[in-house]
Image (cartoon, rainbow, N blue to C red):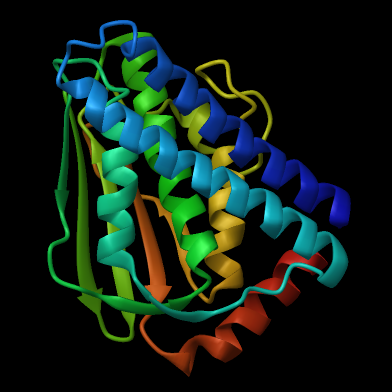
Length: 229
């Protein structure tokens, strides 16, 4: 179990460092006003990487339990959007409709990793294929859950890919394929879910995270089911 957790942390840290490498490429033109924002994004993401390293070390000692607290998911969406936006092609628009503060009961680091994995995947597809023009993140409330939707206007996913989407393995864009599996596990250990919508065109991922402690029993049930499988 600890080896799996370490592989997950390694995946997310590698993605963050890869994004930092894209930031560095833009610094070759220091006269560009974007460079100032890029430096700020680099510093912010390096701080996140340091936190991930600390989280990986802590989990190796204490196990995978989430440190759940009140987290403003709208603020996290804004942070992740800012970190990813500067790595996108100029013709691609990354929009976020999540202005109202929305407090969920979750591990703050887990929430960041879920959203970063989803947007990082979409950004990778955009850079490698040029088939996306818009990525949109929306936030809403449904009952006791916050619902985050990450949708793009790309070609969508073939049926063969959809059937194994959350199982890990080689991705269609050349990555490790672990990002979505990691994001789903992180959502579930916080009492939430991650699924791919049937909506078309494009790919639409829906994350649900609990607004309060009523999801505690759901956390236990999901992890028991996952361990049994």
